[in-house]
Image 1 (spheres, rainbow, N blue to C red):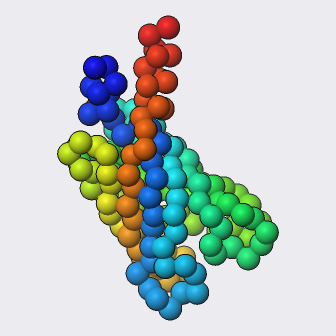
Image 2 (cartoon, one colour; image 1 turned 90 degrees about the vertical axis):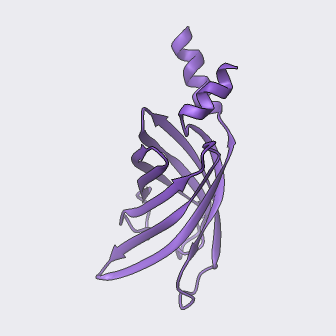
Length: 142
């Protein structure tokens, strides 16, 4: 019962999904899978993401980033910034989306502006587990 109640109050947990680009002129995959560990503390969103390297010209296999933002009601907005690695940009990517009513799916869009160019796309995330929230709840009870 406690796990279900926690789920309805928070986005904390492990998420999996994909993002895509609106432009077909870019020479990168149209859709990129990614996972996210999200911690939702009273609407304050923090976490990390992991995705295959689909655009950096180096030997990295995967790219990691941090996310930081907020959730208000059924809307989420966060910035994603890739970890500081050679050849990897540090421009913040703005994600904004809508959360379904049972907090198990997020759908929205993203945009990044650099050198006066803007690149846009969409994204979708599905909750795989709420283990982050459950771990935090157990720690608080101890």
